[in-house]
Amino acid sequence: ILGGSSAGPHQRPYMASLQVDGQHVCGGLLIAEQWVLSAAHCMEDMKGKAFQVLLGAHSLSQPEPHKRLYAVRAAVRHPGSNTETNDDDLLLLQVSEKATLSEHVKILPFQRQDVDVPPGTLCEAAGWGFTSHSGRKPDVLQQVERPVKSREECNKRPYHDNTITDKMLCTDSRKKDTCKGDSGGPLICNGVAEGVVTAGARVCGNFKKPGIYTRIAAYVDWIDGVMAAAGE
Ligand SMILES: NCc1cccc(NC(=O)c2cccc3[nH]c(C(N)=O)cc23)c1
Image 1 (cartoon, rainbow, N blue to C red):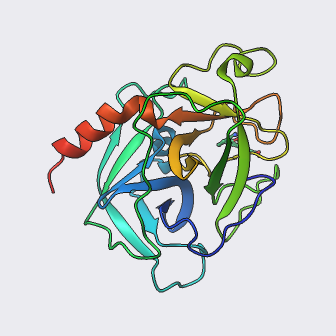
Image 2: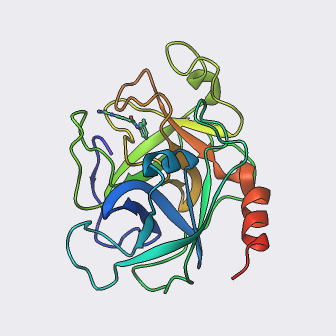
């Protein structure tokens, strides 16, 4: 997160950190007791290694009573996701057992109505991604408030030039933005998860490349279907 601030401890108890060898790779959000939603592109950063899901964390390094690392029982990428585009950039992770819910670990409701968030709506992104262009990594969860940018505007040059589909949304990226390591985390508008961070143009904090998010409401049937089909 560029240009943001530290979240209050456990103020965002739905936040997940996807980790490989104890290192944060991507964000995620707890959407059911045993399911975390993230971004399909995060699997590319795993380099085929086993990864875990950290829940209940504020600091990545400090011991915290409610922090717990879960093994991943199943990782389901959206069938439309691919390495070349930002399309269908969603990943569903079934953790090894139902998460113990508490004040520090909670499910975040997601938008089920497939209606665009009005441009100008102030939303929040959170994550443990880069806090500077030089790739500085934070220890505690960061957050930033960003206004939604209309798809019409976002699809113009010099912005994203007609690559933003109906299943994506944009936020202004001037100075304050998501960045590497924030992928997979939520965009929250009025207390409801509306988007999942995607890397987009892989530049951060440049107003010419607004932040891009996958619109969760456009994937409700897929999400419900995967969770229903999976066993325990
Ligand atoms: N909202 C934009 C956004 C949102 C989420 C993820 C990203 N991922 C990057 O941008 C990225 C990716 C790879 C190497 C990188 N190096 C740097 C850098 N040194 O700034 C960024 C990156 C961008």
